Image (cartoon, rainbow over all chains, first blue to last red; front, side, top):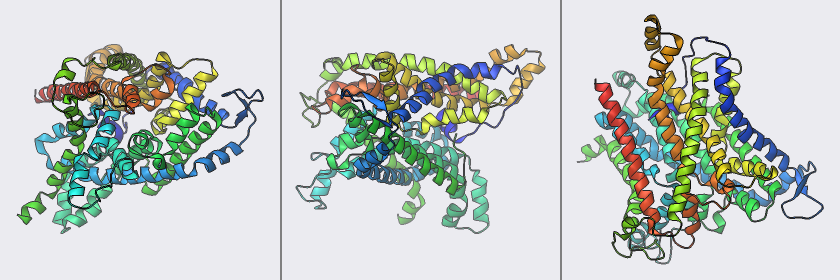
Length: 298
Length: 261
């Protein structure tokens, strides 16, 4: 489980000065790739975001006019989907935290020799395709699925009420699909806690709740921060769950970007929305990381 | 009884969480045995015929082939490039470290849709048509960062005394690297490659933007979800699940054997 360690650990040993050119030779190919296919496209997208349709009127042809009002137009056209993306992603992140924390805690402290096997089992469901898992949720929550049958049988929901094609189904799918991004960092930070610190708290007459509140939880905070970020970021940009499990009223900002790109061929609006999504995420991340007082991310 | 429950509350909770995790997998596997006909959304009867003929549905296997090809090439390139960066970061002191760390972190913090859209916009501007190679390029790009963090963590966890011991025994720098450092980092590189492959194989959003008319396995599932996914897709999904689980469990077994010696 190298990834587990990768999320929470930070390289601490930097040793040995060898030939001064060696690190640069090692870095150049990979960094060049990232500059050409990550940084440059972003700059290019920034330039696209302020373009306007060319005079020829040809579909998909745009010229640079530095029209920053594109951002205002794009936002006012997709305000609803934007807010929805952030809210859905927040709910899914909190649910994932509520499911993952006890699970990670149990694996870290209560599993004994089964630890590694259980860890594999946490990741295993995600070896099937993301899309097949989402479709499976469509079946589970569908009208002939077990959840609706039980709820209808208990008269919790009416005989006509369904669960699919709803905000509930979208958030359920999102919570499930990004769960390992939450569980693994949580586990990594819980596992590093020395059980003796918990015993010490008990020796000092702290009850179980106080021990958790004052010792365990603060020590696991880096994992909580890493996990919530790794869940929130992909959830906010996701549009697959909204497409497969939602209805037209659950569309997210990802759906708008996609349809602007492919259906309407409106590149500037798609670009402006992409940047606003990225900016919103980076601002939320920066505020959150500062407030929680950890910068241990990479 | 109440005492037992409160004492084992956390274990009961964990058990329920595992049930929750595996319900969709059970569904995917069960419906690979469905005598589906056109739509595989409702249960119609048990059959082995999907497993006997996994390529029976049109396009399933060509889509799978494309995904495997893209996955192998992208994994190979990303693992090599990412491992080189990880060694530079983990074993060398140089100017601009924090910039490099930021450049590695940023792609992981960028929503996939932004990565996909920006690359496609660039390809279109350059007059390059989306397709196989643009998809490979995109996959290498988002896999590199994950390879770097995985391999870097392995390098950081090595005991420096092992390398010092090799040097004390008059091994040259190159020999130490070749016979001590690299073999010790190898499991990390292997893990990184597996991670890269699974990220590439399962990617939909970035692929959807950059692959044009080329169909990959996730794209096939997405496109056919409107008119009903053939049960053969569930067969392939189940097979991938069992294969990956097998590889990981075998890896665990090997490493626990080694630790015992």
